[in-house]
Length: 248
Ligand SMILES: C[S@@+](CC[C@H](N)C(=O)[O-])C[C@H]1O[C@@H](n2cnc3c(N)ncnc32)[C@H](O)[C@@H]1O
View 1 (cartoon, helix red, strand yellow):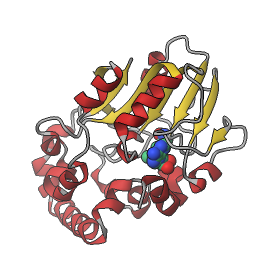
View 2 (cartoon, rainbow, N blue to C red):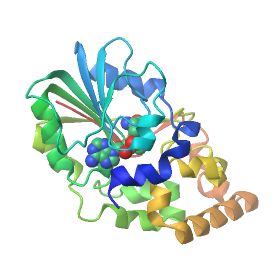
View 3 (cartoon, protein in one colour):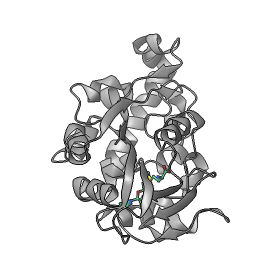
View 4 (tube, rainbow, N blue to C red):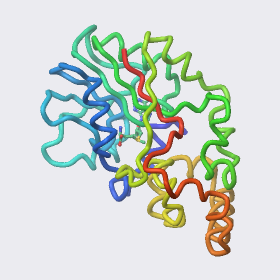
């Protein structure tokens, strides 16, 4: 199943937990600089679209497009790998939490570079040494996540393809966007089906791994084992979990 199709299957409840996190938005919007026209690739339901610029969205999933609020930027049904726009048609192009879904990330990033003078991408560095052990959820409960990134281009390769610099983005403890890492200090959230349904990782590891991870986490929360293992997190306001901005 291609990733546009994946969101036609899992996207129905996306907006229940996935919304713009203001501190991440501030980083993305600052990186857009003075851009007046902005293309949002893999735009989903419209999170992170700046309201003070002229935005055009691209989104392949009809189910995601249908959930864009009234008054949201116009949205074109297309994929990153083949953007239906002329060279340098936009001042900037942005992509948020989407590159890991593209069948050919390098082709998609080059397309963004072709149609825009500046590119801003918010993504996850799953190629960094030790990324899997950085987050207790992948380390202790969901080892299957390592398999999801096999054969994918590294973040360094992606950055090189478009000449981007890489900036770390710490995730606040009360992150308003329920992305996979959002609840690093609120572990009970992962027991909630609604939280998991809006994150593709859970669908991609499959129901068996998901149910095993949830059972195991529930038991560790009840016994105090999770708290014992992760006591260092309680005093942190933000965590470095491998989220990155690529900026050209
Ligand atoms: C996790 S959602 C992120 C949506 C939005 N950017 C946000 O931050 O909420 C990933 C989105 O990427 C889209 N997508 C998947 N494959 C794509 C592709 N090849 N080109 C562009 N978008 C794609 C999916 O349909 C989905 O809407």
